[in-house]
Length: 255
Ligand SMILES: O=C(O)CCC(=O)C(=O)O
Ligand SMILES: [Fe+2]
Image (cartoon, rainbow, N blue to C red; front, side, top):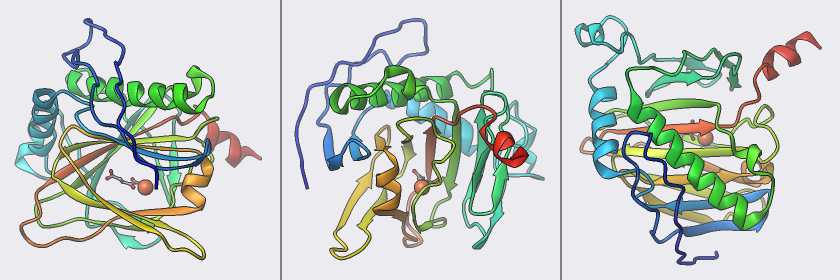
């Protein structure tokens, strides 16, 4: 396991809501076996206050049928059923037009990026900066980092988990980024290597952090999970930004 401390100065853009602070954090490289198998952790990737505001706004929207859903964000959270049965976390999916996302038997069509949630765009920018850092370090074209969708997973207090899995990244363009910005928590993240060694790494995903996974091998040679924790486990929203190619799923269905 490689581990390093690096200085990173992210792009500054004062037109966006906050997140004008610099990444000058200790980036932890968890896996970097080859450019298609990278996992790194960036604490404080998103401004703390922006992360808190976003969590507060998202957390106030519970699910279909809730009174709180009559807020400006409408019916945000859904409880989906996939090939493994009903999920015990809630989910919401936004993205560019035609950036459908298919995984474990569930096809999600994106809602448009919400105009009344500028903090979500700040989170996307933070994720983008982390991807660009990764691109400079491991190579690849910068346009491969364009993050076109976001799957939000809401692990409510004392509830919610995701079993060990590799992400479906067929539709994710060249460098296959999945970048998770954490709000709330911390919650535990477990990485396990498949095959012989079964190496395992555990870390706490902290408020405002970015967890970057890059490359197909990261999803086929490793599994990741968020285990079910006790009743006191704090609520967490994971915003997983992806580089879905618009129209990919539609194109596949036509073949
Ligand atoms: O909650 C997270 O940050 C990760 C979720 C995840 O692994 C997934 O949606 O595939
Ligand atoms: Fe995943």
